[in-house]
Image (cartoon, rainbow, N blue to C red; front, side):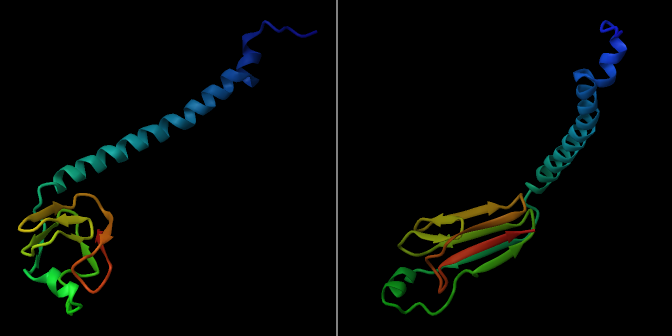
Amino acid sequence: MSDTSEPVGFLRSGPLKILLATLAFLIPITVAIVIVFSMAIGDSQTATTGNGKVWSYQIPNGTKERIDKGLLTEDYFPEQLTIAVGDTVEIVNHDVAVHSVGPFTVRPGETQKMIFVDPGYYFGICTVGLHESVTITVV
């Protein structure tokens, strides 16, 4: 004869035991995730000051004309650039045409600057060099 009203049997093999085991597993993982994200947010906030190196590149006047005539023989921007978190990349366009350099699109006479605050890969087409694309790796 079995007594089904006994709450102890329910705790040993029922859904409550599964729920408690799941919570015991998930709570420490959740705490660890929160700690990691709060540390990452703190790091990126300090990196946004832009105290790193400045990588400056000039697109000279006449670049579009030389490209159109097939006379471009030099790269104004490297195909691959590796920089550190907190570094700034600056592109100055002295040409008469809009140019794309990786993640930048720079109109004539304008300067684009970006402080890279997160590690990763940033890429895009390149209209000012012998190569067709640019990848900026931030470490």
